[in-house]
Length: 259
Image 1: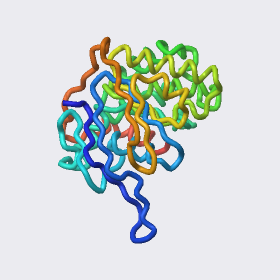
Image 2: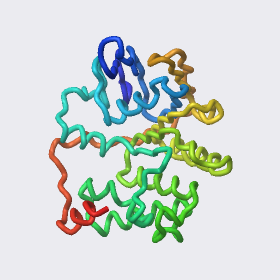
Image 3: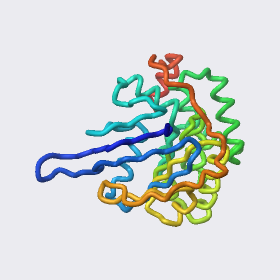
């Protein structure tokens, strides 16, 4: 059974003559431990597909299963738990909080996961150190280069130890050297057993993946199979808990609201 399985997925916007079929019958299976690039031009539907895969949006038709679990059967709290435990997100524009330090940005998902303060701080420091940013932990995003900000974003994506990394045009705002460093990092994460799904319009970036899925006009037009001959042992996650995880402290809630 694939880790991620999409069957006849449809996502439409608008109605009548003005309806846009962002996704039109997309079927795709992604195995644990794969490095898959989903490639297409602007408006092809690739970002909409990433939103569906990452449980940031729901399809209008079709079926989506994560580890065999039908996502349509989950309520909003269960969906949030599944998303938190399964996916780490990396975006083109980093999406860091300008008023928070690098370490505070990395810790953010762990707050929602209910991790104790000391444990999440230790995890954040360890990740920043592994990514060569130990001396930048107290710096704010505007004090970091684009490549450093994207590494902070990757540390944030890893803080809850998710088995899947979803990267949406992660090199789009980077220079060539920073882009090369980022792709090398994503490859190392995959070699360590994480499933990586990369959204890109750039064929050179897509070439780093084991498998390239091309999408156009909301449909998959080509799928180059992965070479799984030496696939790493995949990282797995525990099944999502239905209970909502509350922020552990009123002080944390207040600081989150202010940020």
